Image (cartoon, rainbow, N blue to C red; front, top):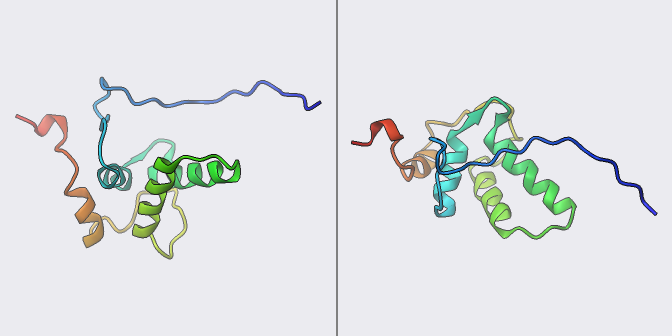
Length: 109
């Protein structure tokens, strides 16, 4: 029988009271936010791509994560996941996605 050991993990849960919480949104809008975001733990793009790879390695079925990763990879063709913010922030493809993002809360009247 396989033994199981306790593991320590850090979990981030975005809740509606968080100013960075996007809420329910179409995948292109979520992709835009991921492409434009970078936190203290690294690139949000890298996080989503590694999550999709880990889920696939476990034979997990998460269409939402896999489709989001597909959208992000389509924007990042030919480049490996980064540990710094995306370099193509001025690209027309990224502008197409980021134009879908809602304004920051402080910019809303």
